[in-house]
Amino acid sequence: MRASILALGPLVARCGEARVSLPGGCAIGLRPVDQHVKGLLAMGAEIDLDHGYIDAKARRLAGTRFVFDVVTVTGTENLMMAATLADGVTTLENAAHEPEVVDLAECLNAMGARVAGAGSDRITIEGVERLHGASHAIMPDRIETGTFLVAAAAAGGDVTLTGARAGTLEAVLDKLAEAGSTLTVDQGSIRVARAAPLKSVSLRTAPYPAFPTDMQAQLMALMTLADDTAVITETIFENRMMHVQELKRLGADIEVESSTAIVKGVRALTGANVMATDLRASACLVIAGLMAEGQTTIDRIYHLDRGYEKIEQKLSALGATIRRVKETGGE
Image (cartoon, rainbow, N blue to C red; front, side):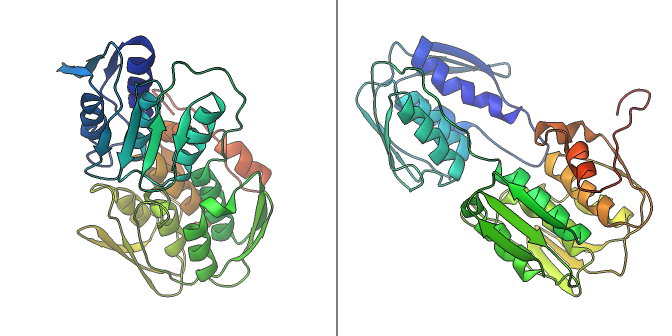
């Protein structure tokens, strides 16, 4: 799991040492952890890379000013957690703005940390001696929310998602409205309905608050049946177009030029056997399967379970004909 790297900062800060495997995750491109390592070095940690593991030691981390070379969500979160127990004040510059960073800061503050500025370019953390227990309600998963919104729009349904935060999904909501969906936002819920034909919309992924890379594949599936041509550009990961070939198996008309996909809407998709290559590509193919005529079979769906809980049961409850089957040698 990519998220395993987030054990590094807290372990060094709390225990004085850590041994964490270099993370894996979906094969969607390079996702280096150099910013995590550089930040901890700046805070006084001693770090060795040993056969796929990161060994880090520090009697006690020290506050510092650290400027991220690139915007990184997990890097921001890791150093923010480490800094809560460091001596002195730590300032993180060029920090990630994502809502998950803000949510983590709120949780840390509830535990006695002193974190200010989360959600902006500069986060300041005043180290404390120790943290204490607290209660914190984790924010709704905005990518899961967005995936179900796109699925409802793709199938031409009328669905209300409860426990959702529209404010974390404005770029996605804007594109869905532009594509012909009707959206109603209330406190804690989002309703999406689509009766009109799909309209082609173009997008470019970028860090929050722009359109999220984790929603690119799902929206591409939606665009396969739109009325014109959509131009979708991926700027975050260099290998995040592997779902294109699988969508073409279903009859989609898509051409890829470097990091841009040109999606020409077709009259219909036709069910076929396809293969999931990563987490969001899996969700993309589920959505495409809902849109396609006939039966679609998706192999390697184990990717789905890393980001969606019982997605087939939730879609079945909404009227989809979908089931998980086990085959000899895997799913």
